[in-house]
Amino acid sequence: MTSAPTSVRLVEPSDAPALAAHLARDAAEFARWQPARPDGFATPAHQAERIGTLLRGHRDGDGWPGVVVAGAEVIGQVTVSTVLRGPLQKGFLSYWIATAHQGHGHARRAVALTLRVMAGELGLHRAEAHTRTDNLASHAVLKANGFTSWGIAHRHIHIGGVWHDEIFWERHLTEG
Image (cartoon, rainbow, N blue to C red; front, side, top):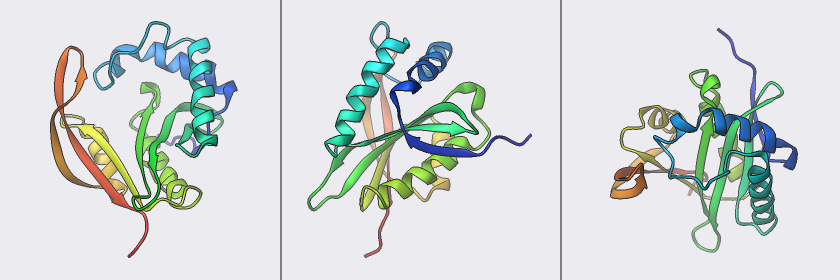
C-alpha cells in the first residue's frame, strides 16, 4: 500500500478541527504515551486556543509548532519546543500521528523534515527527544533519523497513575 506524500508546515488556526477530531478518536490509544489531558482538550475550541498559544511562542522564538500532512490531510503534529539559545542552541522534538495513519512512514518522514527546519530555519545545533522505554515504534523513528540514546531517566514521566522510565535521545544537527 502506498501512502500520500508526507510534509510538515507551521500549524494554523484552521487546523484545530482536524487535530481535535484525531485526538478525540485516538484518546484511548494516546493515553498510553501521553500525560492526562485537561477536560475538553480534544475539542476544536481547546485546540484553537492551544494553537494560538503555540504560535505566540513561535513568534517569541520559543519553538516551532507544526502539523504533519499526508497529501492535503492533517494527520498529526510535530513540535519543536524548549528552544534554548546561547551556548546550547537546542530544541526538544515531539510528535504524534493519528492511529489511522500509523505504520506508513509518516512519523519517520515528518521527523526528517522537522530536523531540516531545526537546522535551517531555527539554526539549532542539537535536537533532543524522550521516549518511554517500551515505545519501540518511536525508538525506530528516532534511530532512522540518526538519533542516538544517551541515557535513561528513571521514573521520569507520570502517565496513567504510574511513573515510567524514559530514554533520552540526541541528534547533532551541525558539524564541528
